[in-house]
Image (cartoon, rainbow, N blue to C red; front, side, top):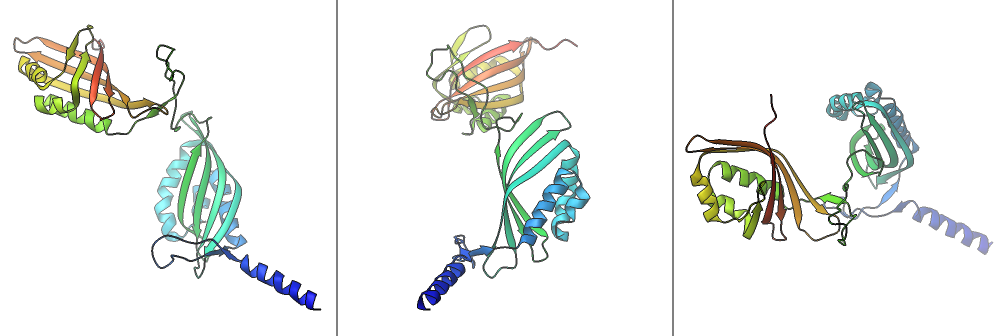
Length: 302
């Protein structure tokens, strides 16, 4: 009898212990609270969302949301689903959890999603999403984290290939976007150039920075060189079409920025030089431009 009572007590303790786990470590009144498993009804709500979403039925999708959330999401959802040829959300794991003493359930859902856009592009993702479901099993908030698969046509955080002379230790590595203020530096350089601000232009460059022009001439850039250039022209106009900052994956912070632009220079005697340019700006570890290589072409004929 004692053994039976002991076994029942132990099972009871294990059962109770298993009902709550984890901890919320964020700020506020919920700090330190644990979680309990939510209801199957909240899971069913997320499963229906996946079904309606995959069917591209915006109206049915909104029926799973609270009135307030639906009002915010309706226009975007209709436009988003309308941009798809097909779209499929396929959950493979759904876990409902509730913070103790809360009426709302956070439904954690892991899924794969395949997006086939009407413009022909394809996006394949692994998703982790949190649906906050109220006591009436309506979604009132939503958060998403994504991991794009290699089969995606776009959105990866790496791509292309660096080749160089084929003998570099980095040959064959993909490229990644760099984000050390290169875009802002180029935009400021363009503004200073168009304003004939020689001092401002020189600030973007490292000491001894070299410029290789489209004719193969090399010059060392300085404030004096910029001032001489500004004094030579009565009009300068540099218009940027695109700025693309890249670096080789898993290397130091140095980067190369490809800039596509159109530039016009007017001399005092009325001579006009106007070209479309592709230029490569090499940013060193200090975030300064250490060299520039320029390629040009005549303007397209009308």
